Length: 483
Ligand code: ADP
Image 1 (cartoon, rainbow, N blue to C red):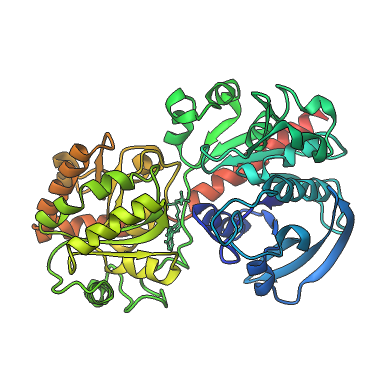
Image 2: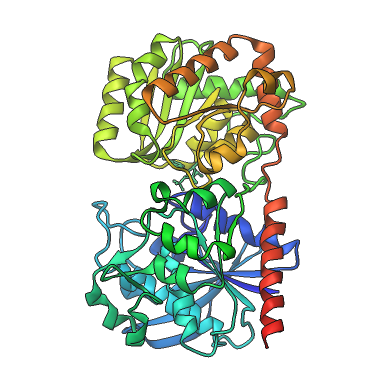
């Protein structure tokens, strides 16, 4: 089964968040289920620099008005198709923003071109590879099924995965004429959304199937509180909606072999974890290391509940804990955390920025990974925490609710608990969760059990990859029944 995956970021070529981890892990996870997945992504500067011997496959003189080509490159067994369009992607900054952190003004064109190229591939422009199924991720790939509907690939099944419904790719109606779509697509049945163009809405309207990244989030986005205006449409399409929880790449994230942490450890050799604990304390200039170290690796935003966390920074120290934060985001939140770190040198540390290596050490050397998100489609850092013995304390929402078992008395007695949940995302509820956590930390046996149980949890892609493969198979079956 040949599947084209279309995404705006893919680890290890380019990453700003969990989307890249997922699109990066799927090809290998699915290959054991007979899926030949190729990944189409933009040729950003960072991506072009990592390609090995790229082979040009096809040239477009006019892809929505720009010249572009598709290059093929295989890296670590994954086949990438790169949309090389220098006018759109050869620029400084991140995948979505310039060096000043502002969105590129032509993001609509950059990602429409990605979707148009994906549809061309679905229509068979590559000489020896045409996908049976196209799997588009998030709004940046959302127009893919819309374009496919207009041409010879209209009957090829499509899947759109929502990694975060808060990001919808909404632009003014003036862009519509430049998308090279028939006027009829600017309608309720197409991309039109309250007079604007919405890439995600177009994708959700037209895809054969919709998935999102946890069963709880699949339910939540059917409600006004979480659906961000698309709950009506999601409800209409509920029969085609599937919640499939993310796994993690257990080769990249394996404390027994991880090359970027201070020392390797495992369930059978847990003592070496202390070396990482010490290294983390040194990194953050924490004096002694017997206090519980709470870690946060996150975008610093309202979604992630960082404002609530910031309010509790002093409480964490008062409870005898330490706080180490790695992240970047809203300037006001960065400033508030910085001021907490200044108030508590030696107890609160903050690294602003993106640092993949440090994110591994935080999981290997922390005691707790805190994830106080207001909404969280799946969340990955709690899964890394489980695997690394960094006990998760999470808000009971989305994928956090699906992947962490709360350490209430019954769960502790039954030895199934893996972390702590709290709800709602308020200072009081978080404070109470932190108190429970500090109490459990003070009981080495209870703590060790929590860590061990988490480290034994299956956070791999095995089960979820099978679910994607079964979904693809179902879609192909119903296609062949129709024809
Ligand atoms: P989201 O995609 O909403 O940001 P996820 O939990 O799904 O949240 O994924 C976040 C991913 O990005 C994880 O792999 C996490 O380790 C990583 N990450 C987030 N912030 C940083 C940072 N400042 N430095 C390094 N890695 C980070």
